[in-house]
Image (cartoon, rainbow, N blue to C red; front, side, top):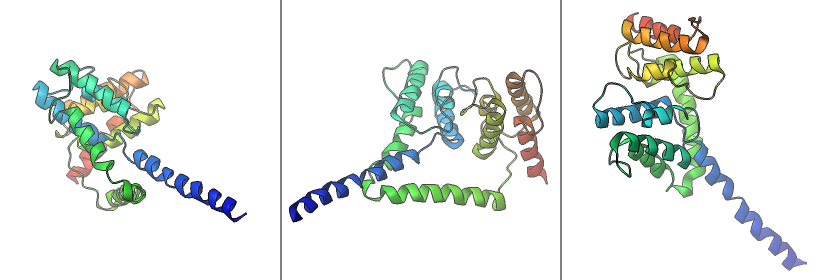
Length: 216
């Protein structure tokens, strides 16, 4: 009887270690901040002021809010290859950025459970801190673009940003001041998803609100 109990005890210990590794992967998401990094890397390659259609930024945009998986990295790589003409990613390019993030997260198997908790706590803390100590720069920084994306998702009911929508338009002016031109582009993107109307509390309103707060 004793030997049977020992046999049962062994697999229980083995199985209990698995959830930690799967949980850690969920903590890495395609955020607006990551999108801004991809856009900056793309602009360095293309020397253009805006992301290219079907390029790495466009590919990453379709996964905003989703888990950063190998499939997402593959899509970004395909987008990068379309603008470089190369068979593989460039050093310091969009793919390199997302791969570095995955690499930094994956080796720490021993503390994955802690990392997931820390990431979750950090996100909660930053959200709380942003409410109390939020800095309104008057620019289309990652924080503002994230709010625009949230407003867009409320209108579309989609999990990510829409091609040619307000988030996509805002990304074209990433880290630039919120000018009348930028607002006009965001409005055009908003109208493309609403059928030609601006909505109260929509993406344009969010951008205007951020601009107003930066001046107060």
